[in-house]
Image 1 (spheres, rainbow, N blue to C red):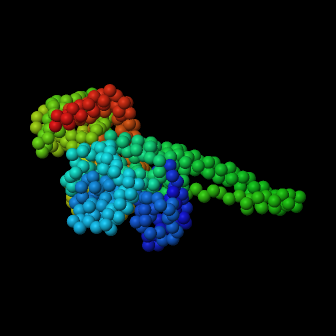
Image 2: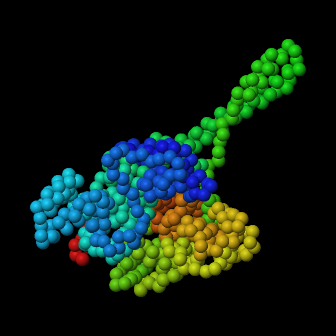
Image 3: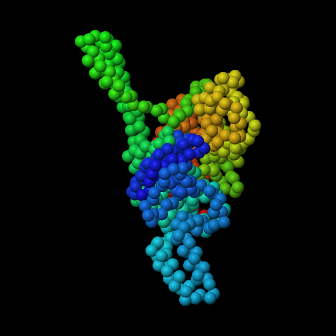
Length: 542
């Protein structure tokens, strides 16, 4: 068990948390939610002990081990992957190293033997003999192949390092597990594995995530941060949303009834206060009026952008024809004779672990990369707008937000351009911010403003949900659902894919799997089983 007791945390004069009292108990998974800047990550650091409270304390049951998912991808660069995972249990790892040092001594003494015996006993108690096997199981489950287990961390790609750090946090059955955005940079298969792991995890979990499907799948409780307080709800994210909406509705209805009663009492008092025969009744009603208090209903600190893609032109029947696209990058054939035809009602999600293949295809369709062979042809009624996964090049300039967006607008008047920025929660002086100093989430919202102002009827979106908070993801999700054009997109957000796409494509070993179906149906299909078999056969041959 871990609990916050009268915790206040101040940054300067501002209280990020004030007099917070909350208890997290064994066997439950708590989803920690709140608007951007509400302090979710900060609260996890307070629970972990990385940050000290201004007042109050964090209490942990004696003897319990806490594990916290770290985001420093370079901290372990000189460490072997398998060792990095085992470091998740610092005491166990120290014992292993101390044992190795003792046994390596040339002048092994009787005292060393006694010490080694003590270490061996503690090592066995901590299931040390299963440590490497357990670490390998975690790595394999997250998609880190066995051949990488004995490489140095610096030899891994960024997305692979993320998975190793997650395996480190999960290692050794910690009593309290703190996870800050654990699904970031994970492919959908790895996310599904993590979901099952957490569902079966018997200790305490506190997780911050912007993935609504993930929170619904794993969480037994929801802790909502709003206005420096934390309110605990029993149930997952959807239950919290319904409960919080219902609570506000009930408070508004109760206030409405109170206001009607107040008006009724005031009218009576005004009418009969001067009437001697009614004076006692008027006095009685004055006392009743003084006792009525309206419930304080604070507006939530959450802000939802308004995302509305309106095409300048209705799309025709001929949208896109792709024939035999092939592309090799760094000696690997990432696209191998890809062909498909997109229709005017298609919203196609590209899924699966092959990130490079998806990005390469999107870059070719957006005209930013040439294929080695094959062709693609857009219909004459189509217009395209592209959202790249990496927007570094787009924002490498000294433009303000307004200047940057104006270059993509047919109408150059500042009020018109600012209107689109306003929809994405940029207001007032925000417009004169330099684009190169924006945060990751702000850059994504500016890119979405560009897509809206373009009036395109075909959108190509490569991981648009990265860096967005839950409110922005919800707004984008709703915007794409009602968008009357064609969408080609990829995302690691399960609910986003399930509710937006009506067609699923996946590129495996350069080959295309194409099914007109929902994402959930695709995951359950025989095609996916055949795909997995194809991958296994390919790996054996390789």
